[in-house]
Image: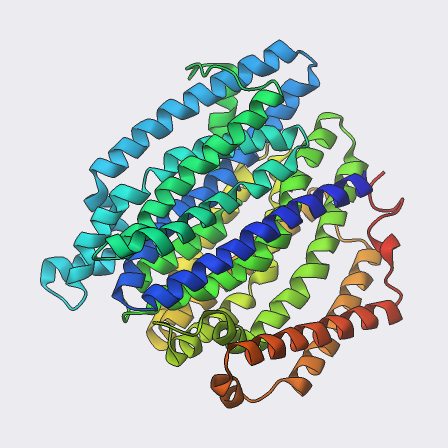
Length: 522
């Protein structure tokens, strides 16, 4: 089973890698086109809302609620019953998201006032950011329908994942990036405000993602006619699991959205600096954390249904070890190479040296919470797969409240950087509470073998940081380099760090058997 999980994880990671590379390309295009000014702030917040909903529905709450119930239905072995369940859940979800989308488009000024509170305040008081509110509200009419597309895309992806067809859903986000890049390059010249071309890219990308998955559902024999079934027992179960799940595994994304809302009340550029730093954080998070979480949930659900508690614990242990192996060095690398990365990737056009410096500060703050973000992704399924929603929801609420208070305490002295620090701290709190409870319930606890494995990772990571710092040029030299010398220098530092990390682990006795063996998953 561990080899199967590892193979699935590699497939999802590879497809996610393609998506993240194109996502990075998209962000480079946006940075060079809009920089970190008012237009960038407007588009990035308008895009943040559907992007937040993507994580909630495609990677978060819906999958966490739907997959365990789907596993129950599959275990019955009745194909017609399975198709009927899919028809009922798709019909019910479709009607709900249609109504919500229509209300969101019609009421976009209300949504804009909620998520752009700082701009709305200036709008009604003729403040310095007053001119941002109206275009923001108008842009939301274009981007908000993404909710409809991505909700159904999330449903399709969850079904395909349950059938062990992980590659399709993992590849789908590529289409969103292609759409935004295409609109930026070919549609923006026809707009007086080019950020609106990017908004249409979001709309087109959402539609493309949904249409792309339909043939795969048809080929798998599960593309059925939707049917409204609000009161159906299984649909009701998913609905009851989904609503509280919005506050569970997705709490870190909710906190990031809160950061964006507060950032609209700070200096112009704050939204953009947080966004660009968050985008670099999302690269390893999506590549490793979400990929592992995607393949682990169906496995945990199956173990729960079969009442195999040992296999359940072993699968959790495997996921934690893989996430720590990848997440700890990734976080350290982002911290020590924050400004060089931002200079190499985004500098040019409207994105200035000052923008790189300002965004690097929030990236360093976010990087301290990267491992926690990833751990939440794999620890929360330990509850959702057992259909225990109350516990992670309670912790999610605690952490949201803590994040709000931390934002208030840190935003005044540290500005937008304080928001990033608060988000990382609340994510660490969430991961700690989830693990403590799993340990207390006897569901999963770190073994002695895993504990020493984590110590080896930390030591290897320290060697990696020392190696990077030894060869890393002064930041003034980075600022004077042209693009290709920057790329070569950054690539060299990453390679040196990787070699130092890998050799140290080998010297400490870490081998492939640490992940694929009888002590992992049987």
